[in-house]
Amino acid sequence: MSFPQRRLRRLRRTPALRRLVAETRLSVDDLVAPLFVREGIDEPQPIPSLPGVVQHTRDSLRKEVHELAELGVPAVILFGVPARKDPEGSGAWDPDGIVQVALRDLRSDVGDELVLMADLCLDEYTDHGHCGVLDEDGEVDNDATLDLYARAAVAQAEAGADVVAPSGMMDGQVAAIRDALDEDDFPQVAILAYAAKYASALYGPFRDAVDVTIAGGGDRKGYQQDPRNAREALEEIRADLAEGADMVMVKPALSYLDVLAAARAEVDVPLAAYHVSGEYAMVHAAAERGWLDGPAVMLEHLTAVKRAGADLILTYAARDVAERLR
Ligand code: PBG
Image (tube, rainbow, N blue to C red):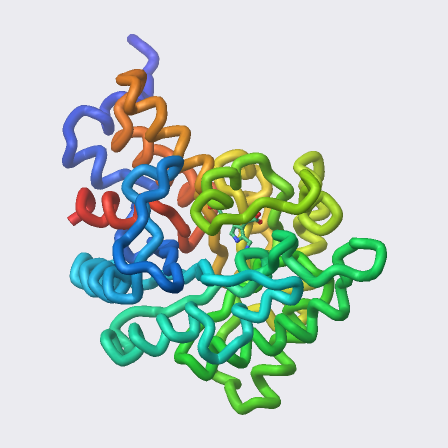
């Protein structure tokens, strides 16, 4: 008599069997499309290091968002590129700043059909490229920056954002923003905190997209997390939740799946992961050379991010993936 062996291959035999037992289902509902809108341009500008992604005009942004809504993508997150940058990043909190103007356009176009998120940071708007204002020694001044984040949050809320997403990694930023929103009568506006955001080399193409160069060849290691630390990410997440974050994010995604899985085990709020510009660009670059099947790898990457525990994924591939998952 032979020993009855459970053969794992039995359930892999047909596509229907595989579909039936799949543990992870990547859906259009999981996707958030990051979009760039630039002040003062008449034509969308391609971003060479992010194939398929552009700096939008106000009009082309409206069209893109309409199409994403048709495809069933539930949310977009906006990044602004101002015509002029200054030391305080005033375009981030000016009621007529480019993202605020774009939010008003989109809110009137799509109503509540689509979730409008706004990245909340100063780096796209400062002439020195840092995520906050600088003190006399040229260091990023944490608390002075919080006041400006609070103003930006209110400006974004007034313009129609459903969700503001602080990405600057200042200590206390979530509390400062929550207080400001509540005081100005925007208790309904939610906060997606970039809670565990690493000082990653994978943001290069994004900095091309928003025309940011950090002054003096600087970096963000003084405020973003050290890639060597995983437990510290959980401290960041706990702090942001205690300060009132409604959702938390791990960023980048693919190189930090361990952090994502640990975060998933720890929290029951919606967990986001940002498949960042470098992660997207690498797949496209290799695919262009014919070295791998780009769309298949992209789907595999995003499925892995979901499997590790993300509820929502910010990805430049949102549109392509939505088209493929239809
Ligand atoms: C900061 C911000 C950055 C990204 C999102 N928000 C850049 C940075 O921290 O340097 C990077 C996103 C990406 O690489 O796709 N406003």
